Image (cartoon, rainbow, N blue to C red; front, side, top):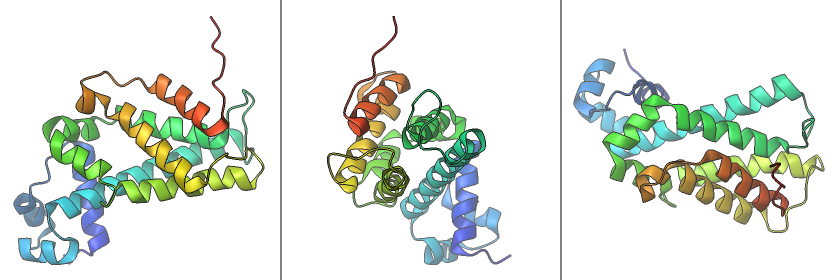
Length: 198
């Protein structure tokens, strides 16, 4: 077996998803390669984990977009008036929050996890922001909404706010409130807070 860098990252993502700690010695042995080969192909443990976490993030965002397309087709808003990008982001956060393996990684290695996930120069956050830019650009191009700030700035704010809620148990000892996150992100994107039915 001679796994490529992409194969190695996907395998690490599967370990995280299953809630297994990615110990480089055991991981390399499982792949049938040496630790030095592992390092040459994907870098150190933090590089590998960063790429694996982004792979999981990208896969989750893509699956959320497919869910929208399957249920709603190519419309920019659903029957309830929810913007496509907001619905996809809501589903994305919901799936990540419910992932037992991802939550175990956050619980077992909280300092490392937060550093990898929120580093503005790391392997996760810049790519997550770029993916959100593309997601919102589709809705802007389709006439779904017109942002009052540039997409780069808007998506930076979206991702940072999403992180604050998604990882709130680790960052601030608060229970994650994904409904509040969706409401606030909707206000950020559309410039208005939806009224709540009492």
